[in-house]
Image (cartoon, rainbow, N blue to C red; front, side, top):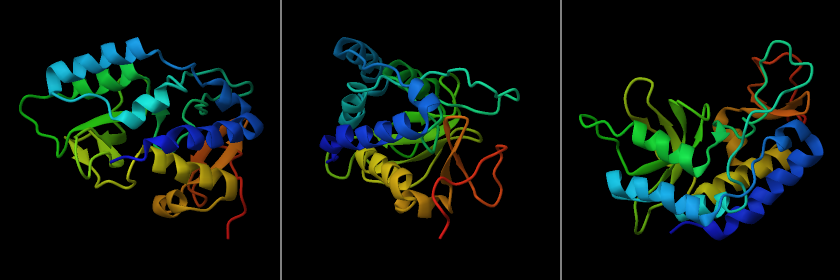
Length: 216
């Protein structure tokens, strides 16, 4: 059983941090998605795959319907993605999440478990991101990484749920600590031109990036 009641307060921790420290990323947030739109997109999953959206995703979409790209002043090289402020990709809305999952409903390929993408490398055409286990019953709701670059690949669940993943993100932003930092080996948060960017401190790919918190 997921800890989806934790989704709203953990998401609020992240968005408060963005508003204060990474305002351009904060601008990428979309308004909540209506329940009717979620039900319509969920029905597509049920029709073709036999499962719907995990409950914690639906809770998240009721407070934020995804993200969109916004222009970054002074980013002449176009290297900044203000909407990619979560480690693992952009937050997909229900339509993008359903389309991403259905695009990999290959008849000759079997994924290790029922899943729905909630993060992807782009709003359209993502080949890698983070998933939520969409099965039902005990042990469901696990959250981890998925990839279709070379066939179906899924990590073992890294967090029990979306809510616990968001909690780890919030802890990394607020203190520079927590399971997300240590599991990424580490991939740390920093702010460049108002955008939250996650990079490895030894080899940052974005000019001007520095970790937001001192490295211990």
